[in-house]
Image (tube, rainbow, N blue to C red):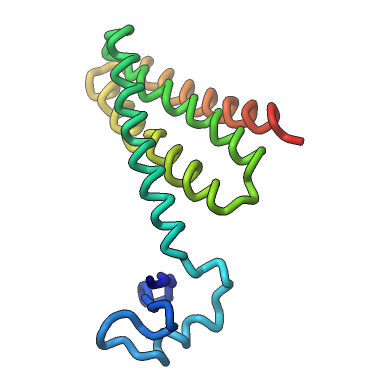
Length: 163
C-alpha cells in the first residue's frame, strides 16, 4: 500500500511505512514538501479504487444512456450527451446535498461515477461539430441549453434533498 502526495516538483510516492516508494527518492526530498501540505493532500489507495470503480461504472452508464437516446431519437443534434449532462448534474446536486461530507461517497459517486457519466469533452466536441457543419444556431442552443439546464438540474437536485 502507498500514498500519493502531490508535490511542487511532481508527485511523491510513499509506502505504508512512510518511506519513499521508488528507488532514487530521498526521504528528505519527500518530507520537505509535506510540511506545507494539508492532511487532505494524502490520497489513500481505497479512494483511488473508489474513483476508478465509479468511473468505470459511469462510463458504461453514459455509453448505454447515449445509445438509448440515439435509438429513440436519431438525429445529428447531440441530444444523448445533453441528456447525460443534465441528469448527471441533477444527481451531483442530490448526492452532494445528502452526502457531501462523506469522503468515500464523494470519491465513488461524484468524482468517479458521475465524473465518468457526464461528458464535458464530448460536449465540446459535439458543439464544435455542429459549428463545422454550419449549424451555428443549433450549436449555440446546445451550449446554452446544456449549461443552463445542467446548472438548473444541479441546483434542483441539491435543494430537493437539502436538510
